[in-house]
Length: 389
Image (cartoon, rainbow, N blue to C red; front, side):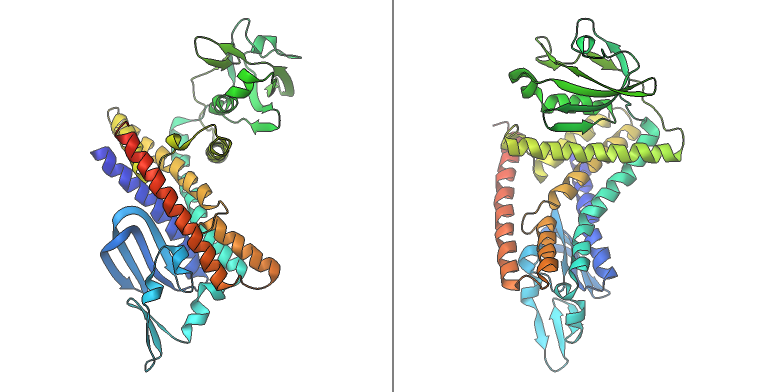
């Protein structure tokens, strides 16, 4: 139960930070924020301060930063439709948030320049990325990183038959390439990830793997053919790495390792998207909020049996992974997502005028409908997985 509660709390923090990014930049550029909320559904706690309503809603899934002049269908908050106009006082009341009529144009999002709108929109994913980096730093400081230096090479393996250079103990792997896919390697976890992504290429095609590595300060490259291993059920190179983590020698190295760790997580998410698009993974491999909380809960429950520190690091690692995932997914050019809005603002910059509000509302509405349908499918998938059906 503790794991589930902490999982929900962690997911709420990720969403809150995302919406807080929009909030900070909206305030910075003088855009009125009608409501800053965590969750969806009916309000449980709500109050107005500094002409913004702050709310906690019944269902701890999602959140919103509803801005003045923003298409309500796209923001997920429909308070705009309930606005009341007081002609005598010259005010407009947005459910307790009151603006003078003459204030509305200067505080409306749709009246700001395209670059300001883009920055406000991008701020949500940006804050997710910043949250991830902030959490990565103390983890790397305490645990170190898995530098991809070869510890041993199996006899009669693909690595021992590589051309023109066989791989040796002490070599540091820096890159892997097959066909048109090239990956810079910073950690040995990435070697396993690359091999997993291209498992079918090695098993079904006569594909050679190009490995870049460093030896005695020299940058070298070699070719090899991963060999299928019956015992492990997959193609292997035949190398192993040291389990001893490398600790940062100073703050600058700590920062360098942390940025590399962030990049590795970004590459993992993008690789997952590629596998989803290519059909390598399907709906059954996806998880929505319910599935994510369940997985987080199970992982936290296991981690807490070791130590409090282990549990805290596990929570932080889960937040890092999900926060980066949320940031990247929101930047996809899908209507109603941040990426879709940024695309509309980019079009506005090109054509020199805002996209027609009716067109924008229709596009965002269609996007929202698509996302809701996808949410229902993913939610159903989560429930089926929980019931082991």
